[in-house]
Image (cartoon, rainbow, N blue to C red; front, side, top):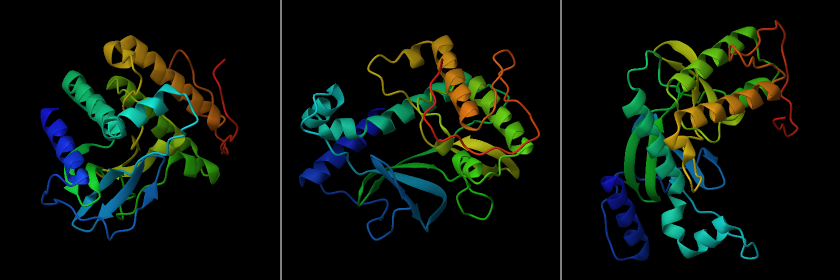
Amino acid sequence: MILVGTVLDHAILRKSGRCSLNYDLKLINLEAQARGSERAIYFHPDYPDIVFKIVEGKEIDLRSGKLEHLALKAFPNKLMMRRSRKELQSYLLSKFDYHTSDVNYPAAEMRGFYESDLGLAVAFERVTDGSNALGPTLAQIAEAGQLTVHHIDMLNEFAQRILAWNLVASDLNLSNIVLGLRGGISQFVLVDGMGAPHLIPLRYWSRRFNRRELISSLRKIARRVNRMHDAMTLQFNDLNQRFEIVTEDVRDD
């Protein structure tokens, strides 16, 4: 964490013009592969097995009195990196506490931090379909009406892995789960949504509380694809049908 903080401080100084660093990575002339509300995703030809996530900032509604917006106004540089910090915290917690798990890690492996010409880049394993192209998300598979019994079997296996590793993942949804090839085996992998941004980190403190939240997220996923999630076996049902994604907002009872 000291190293991460040091790199972050250097990145802040560089942006202010008070520090000059040699860049590990040049991304400025490359096109972003995807963009979210806070970060952009880049590929680099020298790193075919890695995706780089760059914080681009977040628009702040000055009329809003929300605590998050007030905090972003007061501490923009520090809070813009909060997601990457939480991802690292979740990754280290699961690796140190549950590294003896006899199942594969359910999320994309972190590959470190790189100083780039666009700012600090967080590197992750690139989850591909075996041809160096990104694998489809669970949302894309469901929206295309291609969700089969085999996919549900892999989804059950993914769910068991994420519970076994007790992964803190506050944004466990269909768009963050990708079907990829790892070690020659097709499997679902969480590529985003790790960590818990809450002020009081109960999910890091309590394994029971985090497990309950994970099961709640899995139940929502089941409803989004018109499946049932058994409360006793923690398994998605195996009806021999294809389903399309449910687009409306789903809430727990």
